[in-house]
Length: 601
Image 1: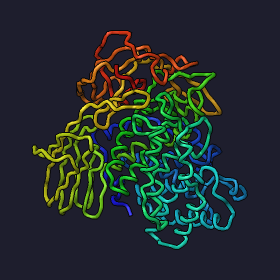
Image 2: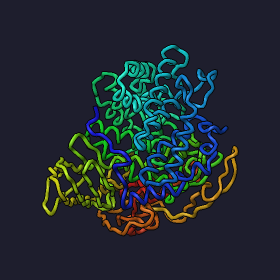
Image 3: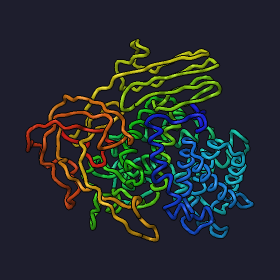
């Protein structure tokens, strides 16, 4: 059983910079995808003729909690319209995907797994009592078809079998029927065993394989946590073992893994797919809830505050398919590609650069992070990620006022008519923790809250740290925030139509052409942190909320052959070619073009 349980979008409401970030998402691509993208607007899921597999379920998985967190009635109505259309398609035997009965045998049932996950999200947000029965009929039909050999587990479904458990666990708690556990065992037995693939993670190759596919691996990290109870198995913390191996051979400075489709090694100019970022975030949210281990929440923060905003445009109207840790330009590299199995435009900002899965799937990142701000267990509530928001839970109201991670201060205003235990997770990197003016140990805080009004002020310090990276490079980190040398750029739009999909301003493609120097190295280890107000766009390259001033020197870094817009994996030379100068490094998530892993000289 999970140590911590999640609240719903009816109980948590975003505030401060987090609310603004969600508003930007709603004003951008997420809130308009059903208007501008045929694969959502005209999907087979709602009776149209466009894609009828993963894209609508992916989009709804983020759009639904986004709408409910913002209490946006138009968006809530749109979500209901889509769900109503999907439910209307359910057949008498329980099958719900837009696939004729004669073609079920050839249909990759990843879509079955995904739509059950999405409908569970809809139930959590809406309380729609149609959903439990719909889910039960979908998955009982799935069980019978698999049991009787009418369909088989293949393709993406074979490698993502554990995603079904998000709905199965819910059904087991609600109905407890024998077939639920039987289906769980079938999925485990016929699904892919990632333990058998570990060797292939150690020597990444430019070969497209599902066992090294970055999104599969990001999802896989939560597999044991979500499945072992229903399977009657003990918990062995396989996620930590797998993560350590992946990090050793494919790790990034932002706590993710390289994967331009498949694992890509330790080169900071290789890409990381956006789908993998949001799926790894979700895995860490569930791992923290299941284990209560703080390491998962810290890794969640590193991804959420760095990798996620970095690969989205500030107005969230466009996104990249893959981001680079050292990204000096976002320009098409035809006829060659710097990536493993992605195309030469995968790092452009656009509507659906390279492939459309991320267009639909990135939507879950910010809303699900907001829902991970507070968790609970019985009569205990924990502030798991310091995010500005308001929690209302059975007579308890907690308002968290904070600008974290940009500043390390938090103010909890608690009004309650009942007693409860309250915890605040303190990051391991925190120093000089102070609570209501009193210095405390650097450990999680626990309070016994009595009826009435309570105010708790928490603050701590963080210090700049140069983290060693492979190949003699270093990355600067302060708390959860990674810092980069920002590269100025010109943004060049490109409007066109491809395969019936119109890329029209503002939802077109953009190349970012650099117009400032990038070939720097750290010249000193003394750093000065400065703060500014959070702008209307919290992760803004032109108005970052925090900067770190550092002494830097230019070096002959060089370009990766045969590209003119990709830097080398390591510098050609570390000999300085300029005097030292003071550079203002900004948060990685703010810098769309950046140098992050650099040498010390």
